[in-house]
Amino acid sequence: LNRFYSFHFILPFIILLMVFMHLMILHITGSSNPLHSKMNVYKINFHPYFSIKDLITLIFVFMVFMFVNLQYPYLLGDPDNFKMANPMITPIHIKPEWYFLFAYSILRTIPNKWGGVM
Image (cartoon, rainbow, N blue to C red; front, side, top):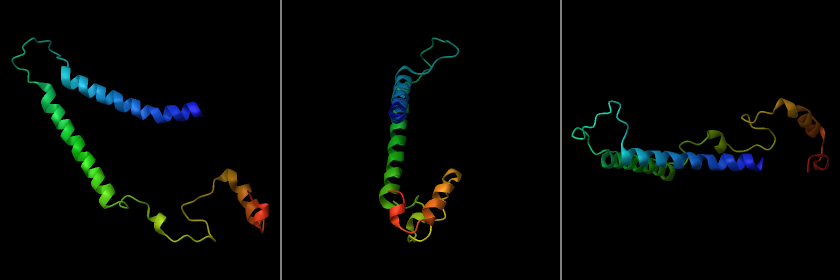
């Protein structure tokens, strides 16, 4: 499992690196020309305009993300997290799995902590 988890952790960073490499190569060299025309008169410089546009978009998204996280940290939270806990009942959003039912019934019949799982 260690290899799987390390791969699971590192893969998003590899994908992010590949996306940035793709954007930089595309912005510097330009896209392909399907007509294969050699007329550079009609071409505009691709790199500065689109790189600045992407940079402004990235900064704007980051600012919105930081604003929501810093000003309204509980905006996307689950309301069940703010209810007072009752130790006598299991919360509604926690549903037991069918393959643990025998263990739940055994543990609930034991009257003291010594017979439970340690």
